[in-house]
Amino acid sequence: MPRVLRIATLAGSFVVAGCWVPSDGYISAVEISKHGFERSADDVRRLEDRDVRVWGFVDHGNLYGDAGVRRVLADYWSGEGPNPNTWRFGLKAAEDDPVGQSFPVHVRNDAGRDALLATFRADAESGRPTRVFLRGRLRTYAAPTNYRSLTGIVIEVASSSAIDLGAPPGP
Image 1 (cartoon, rainbow, N blue to C red):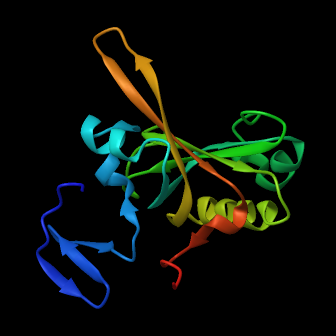
Image 2: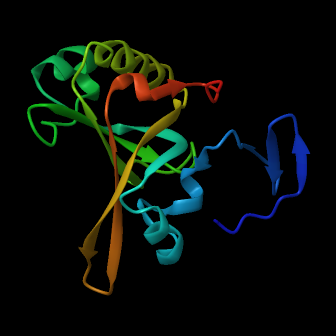
């Protein structure tokens, strides 16, 4: 289990160092990621190739996809997606993390995509953070740098319906 100090329980959530952390089976991106890479090798390896439930904040500066995604996002489109069948966004651990300090979430193109992207764009235009709760499979990859080797995180989401906005979905 991730090492999180439990301070006080409040109706299905708990407070950690003054932050509200949903606990309905969702782990915070901050528990697994630091600046878009793994926070703890042991914790991430335990989750690798498993279905996970994670919450975090959309990195509005990292939204990728095909021409349809570009049409919805307009100026917030960052480029082509990972492949023609998916779109991608960055998931930040904290709402005030800078652009780029996120890890990729790959989502299959489906009927719910444009509505999600429209919400992402509206929040970006108004300067509001977009908090998401997602269910997907966690993968890792080697991310060597000039100074040391890091481990990157990717979450693969089966459909847009596995991404919820605002609050953790019910059981």
